Image 1 (cartoon, rainbow, N blue to C red):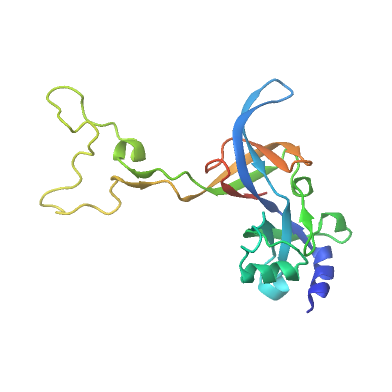
Image 2: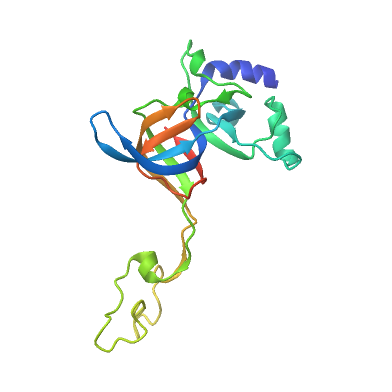
Length: 228
């Protein structure tokens, strides 16, 4: 099947369910009833459609989105070829597959096609519930008090240099080893984490900013995957 044929068919059947974004900041938001909410603002693009996955061809329905762009002469050839097939002049820096569903006949305004620019108000509405996946802040090598919330030893009664020590980590004769999974010092953060049941409280179509109630993983400018 040609790319043009795939675009024409997919225009009628594929509907996107999420976007890629970057975390801007955390702030406060007041509802119409005067309730104060802690919210996170996310810059969602715009995103561009690079590939369309269908059940007939790939075994599942999904859309590959591109986010941001490489600096001039810095884009790799593998991604450049994908961008050219979609009809884009710039190569997206970040690629992600987003779940999609088949739209009903006549729902052409909600469907997507190759190379199309996807804005935040085309996917999300105020009141939608989303789950957001990101990479948590890296904390480096940390002790048990910061990493696991241990209480620590007493500061008096002869305690010397062990206020933040973990204490005993295993038995002597039985089982004569440290059990697997024991909470100890180690590298903290820098892992993928998903937060669900976040409610969309505001949308700015002009700036492509999505505001959700609650906090999301990662630092400012961290890359996020937002799914309905």
